[in-house]
Length: 430
Image (cartoon, rainbow, N blue to C red; front, side, top):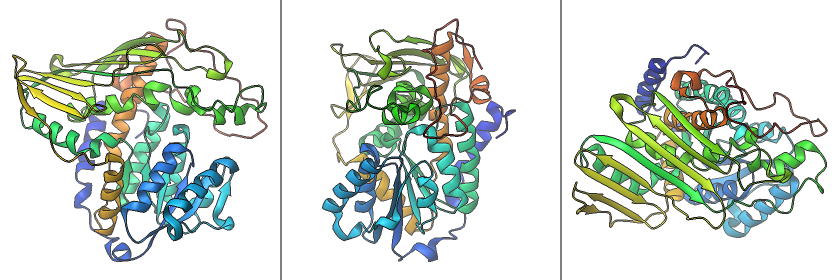
């Protein structure tokens, strides 16, 4: 997609993605019984979890190469995975890659599948390189931290479809059995026409990486990478990095059709101090869809506040209430009487997504989550854009934004000033 991409073009791309399953199974002979070699890029906690699930997903896979910016992260993950999986972890020193170029070395090491689980700022670059090399990809959410990154991801998705490569996104609720049945029932008309969606991702303060701080990590880049969650260019802010799950479910119930516009606000009220970078601690966004349908999103990260992570869909013939944390999935009639409650298999959605990913590769019909994973990421990015600037943002404005917040070139000794905390009404819309 170029900078003149329109909403209509994006919807055409969405339709094309739905046909990906019908592409010729050109890789089935190569992978039907072969051992699949996995490359793992980004060895933090969620990434290590993804590697664990990938190794459990297929009996004939091996972890072949690992890469991270930091030696200690790689070694910690490697030892843990060896303890769990034994001989399925075959990563000698020569296939342990450390540094800013480690991703390319993993891709070039002879792997078949790559797990892209670094901070999301690097997702577009790593995804592009992996697909250019013909690798199947698992990408942890979100897919980018700005619109420029989303556009890059969309271009790479098209190339992945051309090569019939698997692209599975870490929007894990799409693989949750209860969510799947609940959303299918809504698609079949269980609550009538959807009128509104209200979703929340309210938690306590996320306090990550206490070991690393400005005082003991003097190099700008290392300090920001060590504490990546707190810098917008690296994480996208918590609405993009964490609450994107809630927005992905909103996109799901809306058939992955993008909204016309959004308007939101947010701020940084209790998250203070240099080591907490420049991200906000709360957001409230209203998304306007066609025919007057609206989506209401709230996310907050503050201690000693009410935790709430729920999704409520209101329709002409009832409503659906979801509390994933409590495993509650309920559909009610207009009077509030329960019409249906999920009582099936509580399977691990993280494992399911990898099971289905590897099974699709073996079958020569690789899953491609590409378009919807970009749509859901841009939903979060446009919400942040609106909150940061105080302006109403249309889908076209978000998709074609010239804002590019990820530095083009990185060097360990570079000067990398932290962008000021966004101020609505003062921060410009780019």
